[in-house]
Length: 132
Image 1 (cartoon, rainbow, N blue to C red):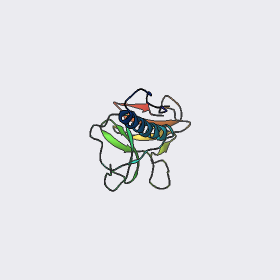
Image 2: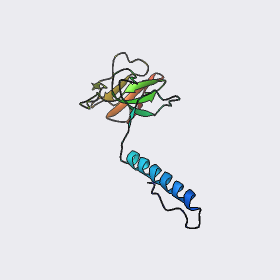
Image 3: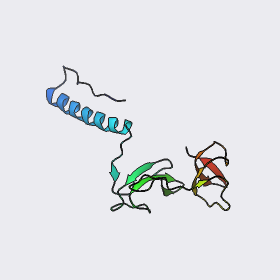
Image 4: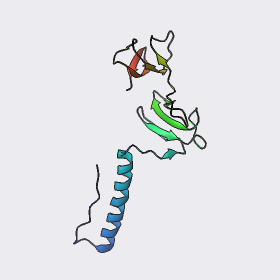
C-alpha cells in the first residue's frame, strides 16, 4: 500500500507543495483500488489485454450486456455479473457442456471438475482454462 509523505524540507516550497499534493492524490487513488473500488468506465479502453476488468457504465460504453463488470479474454469483453442484483451470469454446470465454443465462460460445480475444482472456466484452444 502506498502512503504519501512530505517533500524534503530543503526543497523549493512551491515545488514541494505541488509534489505533496500530487502524492496525496496518488495515495487516495491507490487506497481505493486496494479496497476493491472501480470507477465506472465510460469509453472502451484503447488497448485492452487479457485479464483486464472494468465496470462499464452501460450507456456511454456498453460492451454487450449493459452496465456491469466485464473482463477481457481472448479479444472480447466478457460479462461477469448482472447489473443491479450482482448475480453471476455464467451458467453453472455439474457435467461438461456438450458443445462448448471458443470463449464460453461457465461455472463448474461438483461433480464436474475440469481440472481445478469448482470455479469459473473459459473454453479456449480446445480446452477448459481455470479463471478463478
